[in-house]
Length: 112
Length: 112
Image 1 (cartoon, rainbow over the protein chains, first blue to last red):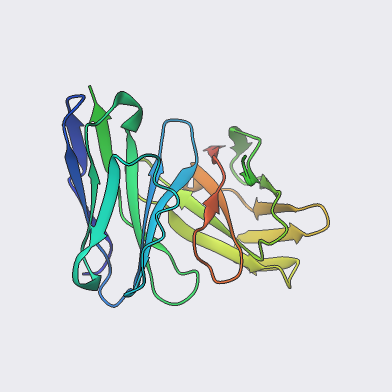
Image 2: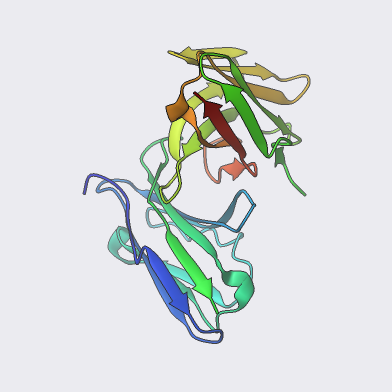
């Protein structure tokens, strides 16, 4: 597609439930990133996929968070047993070559 | 430990005047710096960047200055326009462009 597509755009979930957030990167972009922005905070790195290499998971805040990228394209970020502190905007970005990040519009997650 | 700091949460400027947004970093391994602009309900969009081998980069109304000895960079917008009102994020990277580290952002309001 023309841009990075994320779904859903908004998600309200009850505390303790699992959620899945989806990212469709730009076709041909080999690198894919997940960031999140909590209220009043900057963008916090979560996880990074590059081609067939093992993902860099160093930013995942707990083992309740996981992500996969199937076929080098679509990625899913899964949060298990959601907590209220997980409420944030989750942003996906893809990149080809160096530095040219393109972000999606994000998924606003609210845990009630 | 915030490696990229934007100490001004907000800035208000009159239309036509200069907007100066500041950013400080602590990691001396950073060698590439970027500014992103974010409107509500949209993902960040790339604005301008600078490599550590330069001290200035200009693109139309936008100029980024880098002071490596002070570990400080700034974004100048002149003349400021109401459409520039947005959140501006400073970001930095070391080496290969992976894992951009973002500041907390500065809200710019340009008054007409």
